[in-house]
Each structure stands twice: as C-alpha cells, then as structure tokens.
Length: 248
Length: 367
Image 1 (cartoon, rainbow over the protein chains, first blue to last red):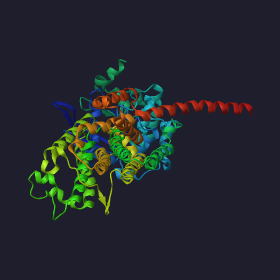
Image 2: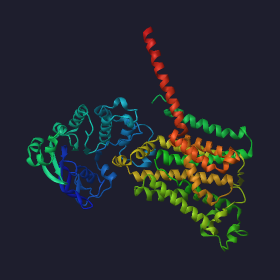
Image 3: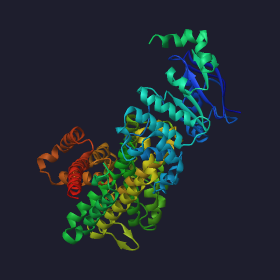
C-alpha cells in the first residue's frame, strides 16, 4: 500500500519549472532513492512534500490524505520527518537537548512549560537511537562542537526521535568520509523495513549499498525507475547523469 | 563543561537567591529615603532589562520596543493614580483636561475610577498589545533586523500618540498624580521601604518565574527556535506561536516594570516611550550578559549606578559614554560580564580537573 503519493506535482520559480508534473508513489516500509543531477528538482520535491514550498500544481497525498496545502508543522505532525541537505541542528543546545526537542514532537508552548524533568530517560527509543548514531559519549556536549559527520548523525537521530512514518533524507552523506558513509549506510539498512524512507543522494556507491528501488529525476521531471542494476544499465540515465559521475 | 560551576543549576538558583536576599536587606542597612527610592528605580529598570534578556538573549528576537509595554503600563498606572485623586461629584476631571477644554471625562479614562480595574488594565492592555503585535510579526515570519525595525517604528508611533493626544494624555507635560498610590486605604509613600520592597518583590518574583520557565522544556524549545527556526518548524513546532508567547511574556514583564516605575516616581510622560529608554535597556542586558537573566539585572544596576554617580561633566555626554561601553562589551565580551564569570569558572574547573586526576594517579601508585 502506498504511503506517499505525488500526483503531477509542479513548482515554478518565475518562468523556470523546477519541478514539472512529477509523480511518485512510495510504499509502506520501502527505501526509495531519488537520484538526479544538480538542479533536477530533488530538493524542491522534498520542499513540496513538507510544505516548505507551495506547489504551483498537482497534489500530495500522505496516508491517503491530501496534505498539499497544510502548513509545515501540521505536515510534520501527521508523520513526516525531514533531514536537511545542509545539516541543521541546534548548535547552542547539548546533544541530549537536541534529541529532547525532537522527542517532544511539536508540543504546544503551554504544555512544554509544565515539563521540567528530562523525558528522554524513560524512553527505550532513546537508548536505541543514541546507540545507532553512536553519540552516547557526547550527550552533554554542545551540538555546535560536533564534527561534520557527527552533526549529520545527530540530525538523523533527531528525525528518528520524532518517530515519523516517513523519513525524508536529503543527501545524508554529503561531506562524509568513506568510513562515515559506510557507518551511515549501516544505519539506513537497519531502518529499512521498519521505516519508510526517501533518500536523495548523489553518491552512487552509497546508493548501491542501500537502495531497493531508485527513481531518477531530470529537469524537474521523471526520467526512469527501477533497481540499481537496471538504472545503471539504462542508456538515458547514463547519458544525463551517470556519464558525468564516470568522469571522476 | 559539566564541571563548570557556572552551568550548575543549583549554583545558579543560589546566585539568584543571594542577590534577592541582599536586595531585601538593603533598607535595614541604609535607612535613607532618597537612596531607597533610587534603588527601587534600579530594580524597576532591571526588570525591564530582564524582559530584554528573555526576548533577545533566549528568544534571539531583538526587540527595540520593550518601551512600548513599559510606557503603556506607565500611562495606565498614571491614570489609575490620577483618578484616585479625582472625585466623581466635585472634581471629576484632571485639571489638564479642563485647560484642554474637554467637557466630560473621556471614555478611555472611565474604567480608571476603580483602582482594581485600573491596575488590571495597566498590565493587561500592554500584554494584549504584545500578543497581537507579536502574532502579526511572527506569523508573517518577520525575523532578525526586521523585527528591530518594526518594533522601533511601533514605539515611535506610540510616542507620537502620547505626545499629540494632549486632551487625553496631557501631551509633553505628562501626568503627575498629586498623591501617591493608595491600596486598601494605605498610601504607599514612594520614598518608603514598603515601596522599595514592592519593587524588589516584582523583580524577584518575575525573574525567578522567568528563570524557571527558561529551565522548563519551553525554554529549551525557545532556544532551539533561536538557533534554527526552520529546523524547529520541521520538528513539528508552531514557531510563530512559541515566539508570540515569549514576546507577550516579555511584554508582561516590561509592563510590570512600567507599573512600578510610576508608583515610585509619581509621574509619567512621553519620554518613557522615547527610543533612548528602549535602546538603553538593550545595552543594560548586553553589558551584563543577555544570555543570563541575572546578568541583565547586574547590567542594569551597574550602568544606572554609573549614570547616577558619574560626575556632571560626564552626564552631559552620557549617551556617548553609554555607546562606548556598548561597543567595548560587544567587541571584548560578547556574552557580557557574566560571560567573563563563565570563562573564569571554566578555567578554574579545567585547572582543577587534571590536578584531581594526578591525585588519583598517585593514589593508584601508592596502592
């Protein structure tokens, strides 16, 4: 059963169509990779799903409901978590506080005023996630002091603390070393099955390690879809995307 | 980091309690009416600085309009005290209205016949204004320097209104209630220890409440929003709602300060709505340390004390002196004076740690 459905979604910036009548359907428990050259419209697509940008046309359905015109915090509360392309954490809060803010899940201000004790200690999910992202020794440190890779993991951990039904990961391995990438792919493979994920990625070796189904975008539209082997063999895809990659 | 006493919550609460205990004891040490009144003024201005610390330091929203709440509440208090002096039958209107050729008491003034209603309005009107004004700004996602500009413009608008609506506000001359505030039949002499203690009570009560609020989950989330509003939004937070609540709370604090101010100076004029007061409050908080409510209080005491006791020559160029202090703090101590304390305690903790480890090492060797 599909959990997320984009129906002919478009976004124009002035006359430039960043996303053009793009459709996508993602099943419950699937890990979908969204691939495409720079400017293909992948991040804009994430923005349209999460309401950060308003669509110029088309509809977004999540769990069968039309969420196209909902505001960001409502979309998040309906069960979509998002990791940004540039890692975004709260630099002046500790790692633990970062996770706590994510855990409190968009609670209202007056409800939050009554909470003084750390709520995280009681949560099994916390132990599991902190072990998964490997930051258990850095809970007290300010998030601003973490290395780039650790910041990426912290943000992944924050999105997991929300316990969303659908996770959108925008270039989770950007700027990571090979070893860090490997560890990230382990995290993702553990999430597969229990979570539904859409991963926007450039790094082909990472995609090979994690992907079930790959969708390729080009010029704001749909180009191809299939397993990683099919995609790599697809001449059209090779032409617009993988050819460039091969030059490295 | 954990070992720095500055970050120890118990130590923080102790520091607050010590400060307020000292403030409470002042009348027993100096029984001087002039001095008590002056200290009461410092306490009130410190409360205004706390409101700045809350919205700017914790919320990351630079409001140059804290004077709006302070000034509006001051007018509310001025009107309440003025109407206590008026008599419904023999003398129903303040004299400045008569010179402005008003024939009846304006509707705006009617509720202030009742002291209780007057006091409630004094706090409620500015707070509600901050709710509406804040919601207007934050749901439109106005941020950064644009909040500063909008609050500044709003302050200027209120200043002109207070200045121009002479029949209602006495314009430039301001309102000077002939008698001090009376509650339950007792007159509160502005130069008495009672008036001073009321100001200390407002400062201590509201600061401790704000401190508790900042240590609750609300405070953590507010600081998260300060660090990255977009990230918080995509964790499901209604950012504008949070910002409006914080802005309104800071408005309530500034309004309480305005109320106390008129109680102890018995005078309100448009100067309270001037830019210089709101900017000064920002500087007090910055000098003491905007990330700490206690820092804001100390900054307000320090700068206002300096202003009172520096020589006459410096008084004439006071704004210049204040500007130099501000620039020096921004360049040298971005976290203010309490930032200096944080650094010192941090280096003490760092020095203590290796020593302790060495001890442990020698212990082990001995065994």
